[in-house]
Image (cartoon, rainbow, N blue to C red):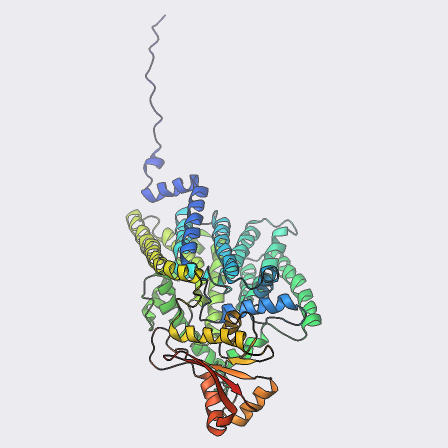
Amino acid sequence: MAKEIKKKATPPKKSAKQDDKDWLSKLEDYISQHERVFLFVILALTLLLSFLMFDVKMSEGNDDSDYIEGAFKFSKDAGSYYNTKAPLYPMLLSIPVSIWGINVPLLKSFSVLFNLLQIVVLYLAFRKTIPFTILFGVLIFTATNSYFQYYASQTYTEAFFCMLQATFFLFIVRTINTVYKGFDRNYFLAGTILFLLTLTKNISIGAILAVLLFFIVIKEYKKLLFILGSFAVLRVPFEILKSSIWGSENQFSNQYQILIQKDAYDASKGTDDFFGFLGRLADNTSIYIGKRYYQILGLVSEDKTTFNNGLVFIFIVLMIVALIAVLKQKNRILLFTLFYVVIMMGMTFFVLQTNWDQPRMILVYVPLTLLIIFYGLYHIFGKQRAARNIIFPLFFILFTFGGLFKTMGKAGNNVHVLEKNIAGDIYYGYTEDWSNFLKLSRYCADSLPPNSLVASRKAPMSFIYGRGKEFYPIYTVISSDPDSSLAILKKEKVTHVLIASLRRNPKKNDGFVINTLHRIFMPIAQKYPQKLVLIKQIGNSEPAYLYEIKY
C-alpha cells in the first residue's frame, strides 16, 4: 500500500471578486455587518449634541410660542379653540400641557425625541434601497448638523414634521415594494400618515400630488386608490367633526389672505397675480437653494445675506444626474423621493413670501435631497473607482466633520447660556431689545388687572413670558387713521399697548426697529396725546414701553 502523504492545510483562496473590491465596497460590507451598532452610535451622538445645544428660551421667531399658546387654549377648552396654522401639533402639545402646564423645557424635550425618531425611521425606510455608505453618511450629517440640533430644542413643527415625513416614506417604501394582492395594511398606514402630514403643514398637500403622479407614472392604480382612499376615509370625517365643533375655521383660509398679498405685513399694497407668484418661485429658488441650502450644508457662511445662482445651477445639475442614475437603476423608491422633494420644494417656493427667508422652510427636505444626490454620484462614478473613492470621502469630511465642528462650537457657546437660564436668569442670552420686551411682558402679568388686555407685536412670546396671560396680537398695521385704529382697539377691548424696540436686524442695533405698532400708535399720540398714558418703561437702550389707552 502506498504511503499516504498528509498535506498541509491551506486557507481558502479569496475569490477574484473579493480581491477586486475597493475600500469603499469593503466599508459597505463592514457597515452592513454592523448596521445596528452604527445606528446606536449615531443616536448616542445625536442625544449628546441635543443636550449640549438645548435651549430653554423661546426663539424670537414667535411661531414656536404660538404653538404652545395654542396647546394651552386647546387644553383648557378644546371645543372653542382650533389652531388653523398647524392643527395637529398644538393638539399633540396640549396633552403634556394639560398634565404639567406650560413647562417649556419639557415641551422642547419632545422635539429632541422627534429628532431621534426621524433618524431611526429614515434608517428603516431606506436601508434596503441605497448603499449603507450613503445612508449612514446622511444620517450622521443629520445627527450632527447644528440646524437640525437647533430645531430639536424648539417647539417649531420641524422636528415633528421630519419624524412624520420619515414615517410616511417608511410606509410608502413598503407599499412600493409590495406585490399587489388586494388591500394591504401598508396602504392604509401610508394614507394615515399622509393625513397627519397635511394636518401638520399646509404645504403637505404637495405630498398628495406626489403620490398621485408617481403611482400614475408606474401604472399601479389600485395601490393609488387604496392610499388616497385611506386618506379620504380619515380626512372627510375629520372635516365633518371639525365643522361641527369649531365651525367654519379652516387651516388654509387663515394663511391664504397673507400669502396672496404682495407684502405679508401691508395689505394696502394689494395682491399678487399669477406672474407675481412665478416671480416668487424664481426668487425663492435663488434664496433657498442659492443660499440657505448651502448654509445648512456648511459650505456658505451663515452670515451671508446674498444668494448665488451658480449654486442653484450646481444643485439642479446634481439632481438631473441623480434622476439619470435612478432611472438607469430602476430605483422606484428614489424616483418617488425625487417626485416628492421637487413638488414640495416647488410649491413652497411658489407660495412663500420672499421676505420670510427662513432656513426651516427647506431644512426638512435636506436629508432626502442628499440621499438622492449621493445615490446619483455613487452610480455615475461606479466604474471610475478612483474618482468615487476621492469624491465620497471629500464630501463626507466637508458635510459631516465640518458640520460637527460648527455644532460643537455652537454647543460650547450655548452651555454657558444654558447654565444661566437653569440657574434662574431666564432672559440671559437674549439681546437687550428682546430682554426688555420680555421683562415688560412679565410686568404686565404681575402688575396689571386680570381683565386687562395688552396689544403686543409678539403676543405669543408675551404669553409665554407673561406666565399664561393673554395678549392681543397685532402683526400688521390695522389702520393709519387714528380714529379707525381706536375704534378697532376699543371694539376688541384692548386696554394697553406694549411698544418695544425690537431690532429689524437681529444681529445689530442700527436704530431700525420692527415698527408695526409705532405706525399705528404714533398718529394716535399726535392727534390725541392724552389718550396714551405711559405706565412703565424698561431699559434705556432699546427700551420697551407700556401705555394705557384712554378711550
